[in-house]
Length: 115
Image (cartoon, rainbow, N blue to C red):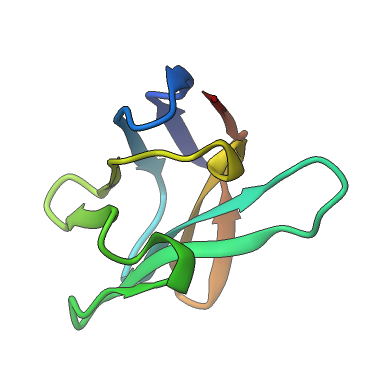
């Protein structure tokens, strides 16, 4: 059984910062990819940032320069540092981990940015 536990969401004013963390536990091996997605009300889930095993991160254009993703392979954790937050960043954020071709999802954490 694999579990992804997310933390760090909340309410913040525009221009503020939040840090999301995700820890993977259980029988998960050979993690090839760790990333963060988000889903705003009435919209499809979209990739925010991801980092494969190569370590070269990719970002959605709207968050480049504001968000930074990092992963700790020894601890099976992935974090998302979000700076200069905007109201349009408001969404439920989901951690995603792929190991041996199997995709796992966290339960989601709400991020709300007030104007």
